[in-house]
Image (cartoon, rainbow, N blue to C red; front, side, top):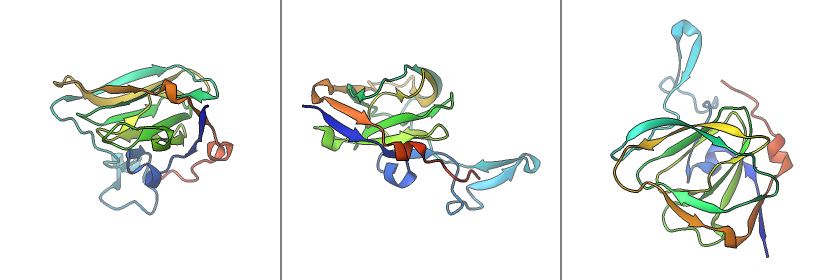
Length: 184
């Protein structure tokens, strides 16, 4: 018997146990230290939204080309990276799905998973040791800018096969149609 998990909107508060949502600071979050004008006033810097953790490696910027997933999306594998954070940002203006489980011991069942609907203007950064599913692109094959630890010693990717859990994702159309009202 399969289990269906319905997406919820990706918000900073709900995603905080797993990492950071990469998007401009909301008006309430802005301070003179984290949001200020640069380039003679032609740009506003939203400073230090997320910080990379490396633990002995270097920061790498890569592009992952993810194949479009057909609905319903069947989950297959979870992974985690013990030595560093990993950030993803859609480069094609496409929405995508984010699946996570708490850092630490491997997830035991679908009950341990959280599923978020990420809008194209939102990136995510997983904290080190946070379990997550590989990229789930919607609409078309999509390119993602990836910022993570490279060239370090030790195995920085562990996987857990979950095909036998028979978990699939259902997209909550209301959360998929919500848009961020203000970019500052």
